[in-house]
Image 1 (cartoon, rainbow, N blue to C red):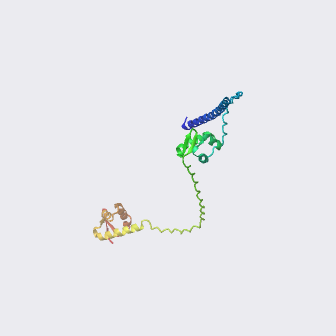
Image 2: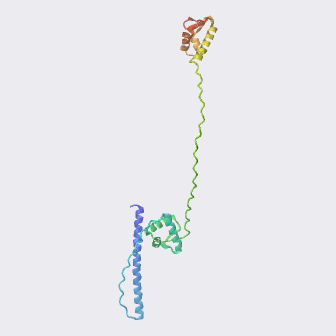
Image 3: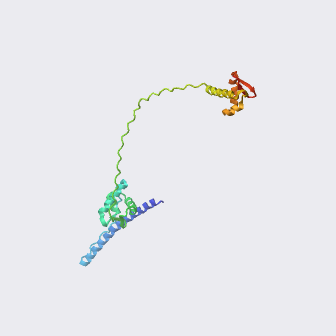
Length: 239
């Protein structure tokens, strides 16, 4: 059984005991009234009247009908209003439950939590409470933020026409490169004179692969009658 269920069980038992105490109080009042009547008759010397019929035990107070559970904020404000009206004498839980037409167990539970939550609420007697200060001010309602107007959707305008891309004319594959290589090799052969130049020396001077220079001599250079082979991988310009 958890603490919440245990508290509710205790509150119900307290309510039952309060009802029994009220019934016994009524019986006690009836007995005291009879005793006072007999005492007065003895003092005055009058004949004792016939014994009064036994008073029937008072019926237990009818339990209040269950009403719909009030919202917590509304219940709080109504209980504090009852406490302020009662003043320093305080007010009983059963009286508040009767005035609010609600289950006393709900009021007991509220006061059980209020003793810790609200220091101004004090218990002055069993099931009786009062205020020792001012009731807490109700919380101000949150201001409702104004709704921002929806932004107008942008109307799509005509897209600007794209300028046609002009493709640059491609140079003939390897044309410039081969022409430049040819000019460099011819210049080197002319400068070497009759001794000529080796493919290896040209590759090192131009920082080019040996195979590229060799392919040039085997193809383009071979078609040039001024380029003569004078030794193994050695060529001269005889123009």
